[in-house]
Length: 206
Image 1 (tube, rainbow, N blue to C red):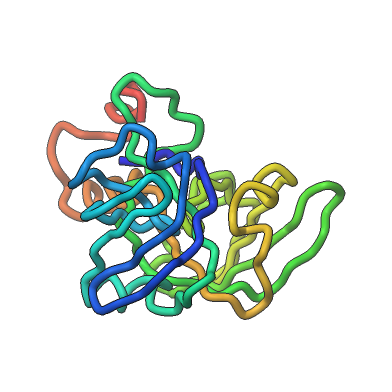
Image 2 (cartoon, rainbow, N blue to C red):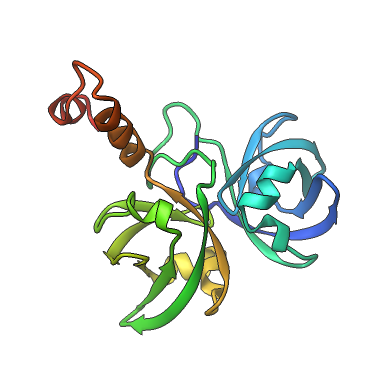
């Protein structure tokens, strides 16, 4: 489980079949083999590391569903270690299980922030709500506006400076993970699970 608060920008050192090697510093503190690290929001398993880099495994399904297959040597990536029990949850619950990819279709400065509009697949749009959460390349963001096939988020200057979202360009493909709560609510409503209601969820902190 992650928070969507990026700890560090890493850089791709090498790419081979089933493996990425990434240069990093901060996320290597107190890690061990088998630990989970989110790379552009994708939960991956640490299989090797040094003082300055680490390697993770990638599966064909991961490459197909995310933008990791578009990475090249030297490309920057967002990095986050898994959430420690008792740690601060500054963003929202992010699983690192990418639901699909979207495309950046517009960038517009708005004061000190940058308004980013992304096109989203129809199967994900129903989970996206105004003022709700979404993770873009692993960054926890609040939805500003949505329509039938796109949504916008506002990225503050700190996030632009400390994540790869500061390098976004129109046409870029980004990883999307919708708020897991929306999927739970849909599942509950469709299956009509007895005893669990919206009031029950609210009472228990959801």
